[in-house]
Image (cartoon, rainbow, N blue to C red):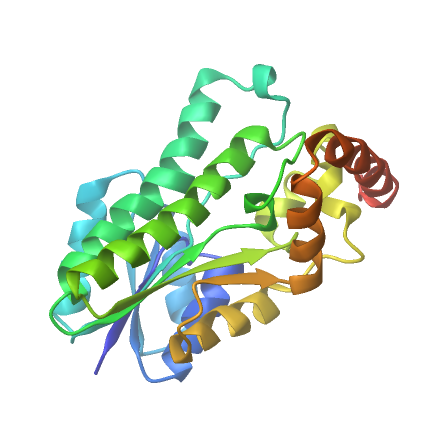
Length: 262
């Protein structure tokens, strides 16, 4: 049986991706920095899952996960989903918050991808990196978070190029969803600087994002924006930085009106 690793699978999108990978016949190593959350996911999803603690900031933890998955069968899928969201103006973050987001959101993807490539390079597979709609343009209030997601998008394309140049049969994909109705987002909904997250017509459902992410296993697509229309607008406006910032202020005000505060 082929195996898969999903980081940050204790809840939200990660849990839904693990659910769909198990349904496709993979044995899924469900990992999370919170072992109890990983165990809860594994209990919900059944016998095709194994829980494991994994701190995305630790490169050795990724290697250990790859080894554990390999003991059960060829590693075919690695999903770098773990991430941290904090919404403050750049200068208001503590140093520890900045370090946490950069290490979890960016270095976690780099470390996970390196472990996955080493485990899959002989037989091939897929790496799915969770980026964000904020990968495509500025996001005032989420500047540090957005910077990590810009970097994830850039890393994904460059990694695919390196793999193709080396003749290694691994496909890499970046999933870039707009705001998603997850616990991570709900935990920030009272933060004033989170308003822009709620500027979309509605938050996406984790199950819908997971469905589209797992469908990439049947695709060579490198970048998947969800929805594509929002990405088109974000990319287009990013080409005009000053006008873009004025437009984003309108989005922020719209999000402020819609943002739940209870």
